[in-house]
Amino acid sequence: MYVRRYINHLRSDRARIPGLVSMTLDRVATQAALHGQGSSSEAFVSVSQMRDDVLRDEFSAKRRDRLWKKVQAIVENNANIRANVREGRSGEIGRTWEWIGSVEAIEDSWVGDRRRSGRHSLGPAIGTPDYSADSRATSPRRDGGEGGSQRKWDEGRPVY
Picture 1 (cartoon, rainbow, N blue to C red):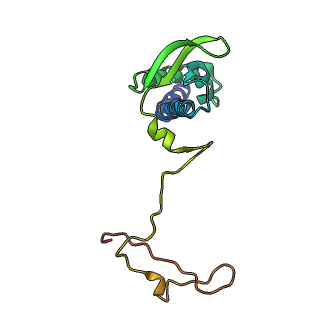
Picture 2 (picture 1 turned 135 degrees about the vertical axis):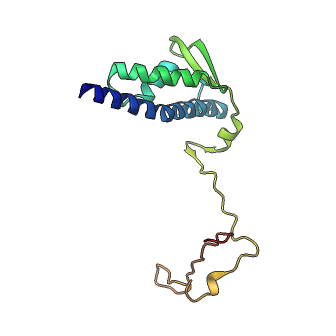
Picture 3 (picture 1 turned 45 degrees about the horizontal axis):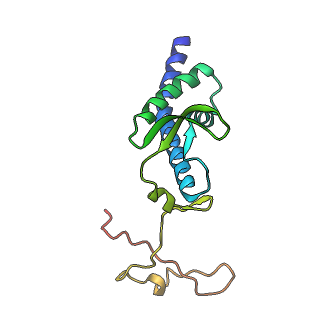
């Protein structure tokens, strides 16, 4: 009974690690982007603060340490991360992570405090059929008026 529970915990921890690594890398990259915009005074993030933020829902100290050791090993082997020992604004000396990868792509996707999706609508493609003249495609507008239209999705390749 206890062995099965322990094995299930190990499996769930192993499944959580890629998500935790992704979240950690995203937050370090976001910190670098905020610093590049001038919204943050530091380009680096304290490792201990990152651990507490990423694993805030994990209350078992042993399990938290075991998870964080694996996450830390993967993050520090990433080529976009520089690990240093620095003094923060509060005077605390500790291990930090700094994003040294490309920041332009990150900065371009930020507007203020909100992230843009990166999707752009260029309107209807040239040469696509106009379905607004089709009687089946028209539908009444929500305000009760006539003439609203829906266009059918054109996949651009045959659907089997």
